[in-house]
Image 1 (tube, rainbow, N blue to C red):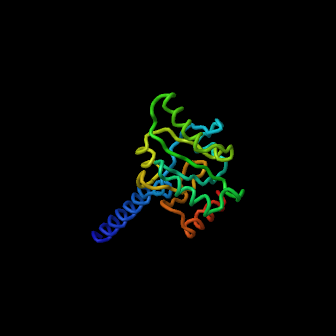
Image 2 (cartoon, rainbow, N blue to C red):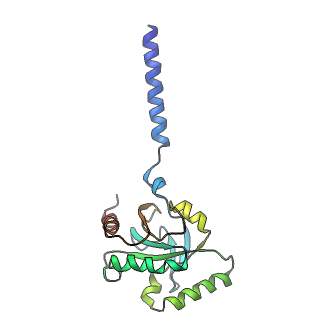
Image 3 (tube, rainbow, N blue to C red):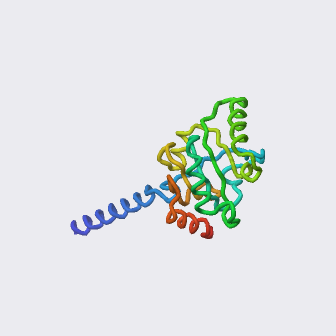
Length: 183
């Protein structure tokens, strides 16, 4: 009789432990990251509510943190033929430490406007004024030293993420993630 009680107790303990681990285990969005919610505007002054106001259910965001990362983003744009492929919704997202004032933000936007004179470029450029370190942590990124190509949905979940220079295999994975249907 005592051994049956011991087996039952051990079984209940194992079931309880398994249940606890299942609840505590990370889901895909906590592993991959989540884009923080914020209000922004394109360089054409079109308001964008991120993530629920993204232009598509799955959007490719090319995220930068430093001025010198422009060439790497261009590599992704050219490598994926983004300017000529209307099947992919994408945007540039430079993340800038918030200067804290409207004047400071305007100065940053003025520099970007000089660098991106074409309306087609300005329509896809959404500067994010925030704390870079908080953004990196929330989005599940590693550092501000890399460019990131990230597929994000309107719930803010990062569905795919690659860092660094363009790579054809990584680009293929991003394309496949962008084309998957949401349920």
